[in-house]
Image (cartoon, rainbow, N blue to C red; front, side, top):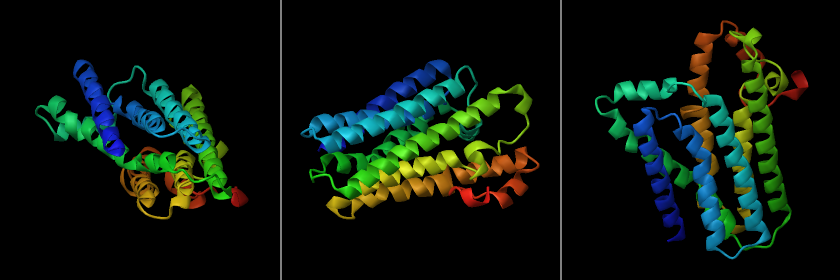
Length: 252
């Protein structure tokens, strides 16, 4: 019942986001909401079970990850028109997209984040004493948050410099892999998975596998690379030299 209540929280939050979209005639802020779905769920799970060092660590890391991501996306998207991804979805679902977006955009995000967030429920509910595997998992998740944050910051600085317009970022963490932010993102979820291994391997495997699939084959790398190849003439050369996700420090 506790896990099901988290879905209700997500749906209500999504409904609020949808109401805002009606006023703005823009659904891009659903990206900002993505990290907050998990923060809300983690807070709820934390209060629903007896607090422990384990649950406090999960809550802290989720808050750092979700709040950081939402703030970054708010800064990145502030004052901009609707993202091209959503413009395409809007075009394909007219007429009345403003109403259809309640389930096509906001409803889908609420359910998807609930499914992905199942790992947080398992991690916080876990009452086993902390062992070295948990410490390793938390460390990997924290490293992933830092790595993703640095990659996003480097990209934001690069794009903010007018001299870099039309250029491709190939320095910093972007020198070692083409999508260091996604690499950090995957470390976060696989790190959380490791903190649940004391409960066995079961539904806790759904989240890291689903996020890996979404990033590699659905909404992440595949979609982004198709646009980057069209946008930058030198991207094919960049692809040949640099790994997709896993950093290759030894050949940098």
